[in-house]
Picture 1 (cartoon, rainbow, N blue to C red):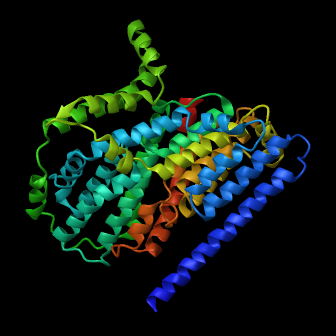
Picture 2: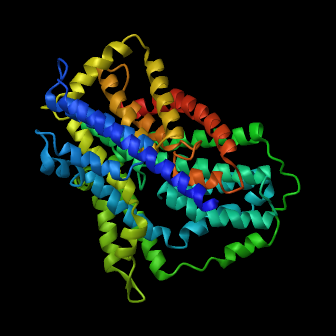
Picture 3: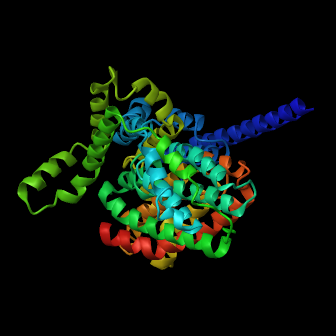
Length: 498
């Protein structure tokens, strides 16, 4: 009977995918054959059809093969062709940045430093004074580590530590405090992925849309000056939600157990190889951040040096890091296993989708196609009567709902595609750079429903919490995040980016 049910489920899934695929192809075919409206070129009509059809597949099926289909369909647009499509996708610096960053940060994730940082927080004297201090330290560790690590990797690195904490505290499935720790792990993993663009696809996608549409750039230093303080405020708000709304029972939790000290001692001392990886990791982070902060220095040689470094772009630091780790050896082996890093460290579905969105963005902003101008002119009458505050709230709400109910990646690509032209048409009332940064952060935070991120589904089915609680607190946090980012984050971003 079980096998029959599984086959029925599989058939249902296959049938749904088949129907969605047919619908997407019909959408694209209609736009390819239909006459274009006034103000839009024939190629612009085709690109718009590809955008709508592929977006439908991304939402209903997933990001894998639909992204490859996107590249294939763009090659059939006469003014684009296959060479141009490949150049603007796999040949784009953003693609290289993500590929090198995933590989490089994987090498760091294999050291013992991640576990040491996490255990250093939860086994500290401060953390063991009370259950709320303990929760604060655990979540803070997730945030800090997550600033520089892929969210999915982070979740599955921290998960075994959390399960050991459950054992030491004697927590059982169904306990509210255990549920809070699981939900908090999900929230903080997502939040950290929006606080920096390092090893995080979502802010990078939004910033790339902005660059495609405006020709200007938001550098990583600017983004982090906005996103990190805003993220800290969101983190504090999350703790208040847990403390005063969730209110788990913390009585009887023994945080003095010697097992915590044992956990810390079980982590082996860092080897010379791991210490070298840490030094190279810090060097790469510095090469990412310092140029945007110091190239305007009043000291001439500092300004010239970091202006020169900045010219190499964002993909050069992780590339240098990979080369150094390949040359340097410990116990006769390179500090990075390139084959393993390529297979286990790179989120290939994510960067394949990035390649598709890069090519799609380039096509939509191609001046000869004219789609951006057409969309701007079409949207402008709808938003003319709205105040700046309402526009910010509108795009923040859209990004929040979509990132919680569908894919973070689709949200990070779609919402700024519409928001930036609206901002440009506002005559400066709405900052295009600031609203892009706002969307990049919000798009990363969705944690309510399983389609948002794979680890949301894992947490919801773990038994330590459930999908209903994730939905409840996920949407509550969504409202909190929208308000904080709209009324505190946007002004910060606007002040930094103008």
